[in-house]
Length: 334
Image 1 (cartoon, rainbow, N blue to C red):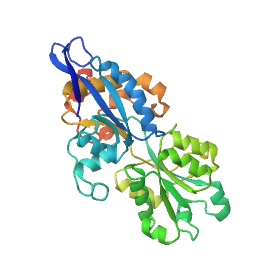
Image 2: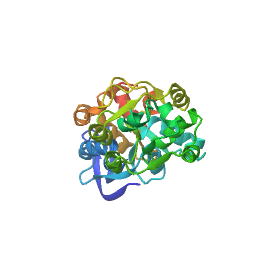
Image 3: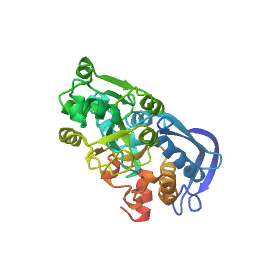
Image 4: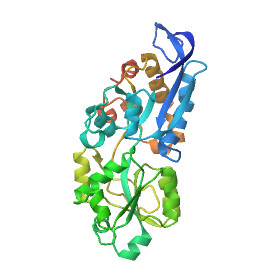
């Protein structure tokens, strides 16, 4: 999981990796950081985190960002040792650990542990182009999806939380992806970096995305394509809530919103493998928590991140790594 290049002896009383009065042999560590592709907000987050993590690791260590994965894929990458640390959604971490049938086909990924959570809220949202609304008169998601002129849907591919969430939305309305296509609908799944161009070129009508304030692709699309954020139907909100998402509004954050938009939130946490050395897990947790203000200044979508609540079960979803537990207990937070 971690590549060792040279060993150093760290006195834990004087190192960022340690607690008072102890010492440990700590190897120089290269961390593979699971994010998402370029253009995603998690890639931006990972670049910011890496800047603050590297000084907390032994001299000569480095952090490499993995520009793939996503909410569904990152728990698998960490479980299998292909990433050392990664962003995940609270709900997908739970789904992965439990082997949720639809998403993970019943296969459990029990080796993941959380360091912290509550990083930011991530909503599933639907945006319909004003051109489609003007052309058809369908100004709600339910009307559009169930119409005889169904919109061309665009979203990220498998590995993101978006496709399974959209599947739940469809099913709440009596649709499946196959039934939608059979009725003349088109579903386009492409890398997030290609979505803004597709939208600007008029090749899609309805954009589903996992959004936070400042999300790069959503921001670009909303500023360059006339569109409207639409409330998720009540049936869909109920179904998403039954699947573990938090139902609460997306606050006004983008052009195309006239006010809060009814949506559901995945939550964001930071996960590692259970076998990560306690000292490393402690160091990562400490670096993020104690650089909270700097990280938030670089990532406005994290303004709601409350450091003292980062350990709470509702913010992490899965068990904490012992190294993280040690840090929170030292702070007197748990």
